[in-house]
Amino acid sequence: MNISAMFWDMLAKNFDEQSEGYKQVHIKTVENAKKYLNAGDLVLDYGCATGTTAIEIADHVKEIHGIDISSKMIDAARRKVAERKIQNIDFAQATIFDKRSTKESFDVVLALGILHLLKDPPKAIQRIYELLKPGGWFVSLTACMGEDKTIPTVINTILFIPSRIGIFPILRFLEVSKLEQSIIRGKFQIVETETLYFDPTHDLPYIVARFIAARKV
Image 1 (cartoon, rainbow, N blue to C red):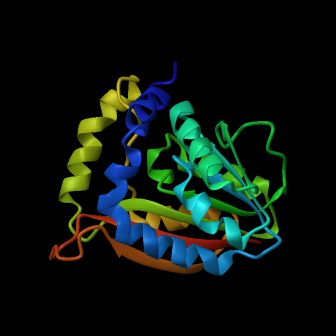
Image 2 (image 1 turned 45 degrees about the vertical axis):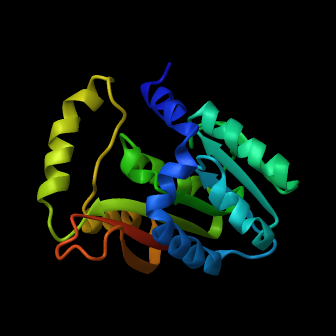
């Protein structure tokens, strides 16, 4: 079984409670994302976890397809949607490269909190480009190195070998400039960016969340 899937399966039961610490970042991210949604949109929520974001935007779009590598996350998402009787969301355990998703089939792809967990973010960005309709929106939130790069650099170094040999899932804090370069090289036009702080009281934040809205050109 995939080590990353096992890891996220273990976290699924308490994932929503553990995410409370990032509530303000989440609220602002969803607020930003809604600006790029329309009533007729078909949306792919890549790395949907327990479906929280999909549920919050369901009234703003036509249909949402949520995917996640963790079957336990998908089970939790399905339960939440069933309890709320939401009709325009479906969830599946899958990766972004699943062949059931066809080229130019989505108006919007959300990638919230996922790119820094990938072995090859540029490859995923290219796949997102393929899945989007012409003029479609790629909306992402990614954990990045802040002004103080010491701590995330140390974490990246410590986790490099365990993640490479498969005993720990990928975790990599990207530099904002390199992340944005990857998106631009992926043939997207960046329209909006915002840096959100997990701990705004820290004088030199060492991990930040970078919100990016980019259009397929």
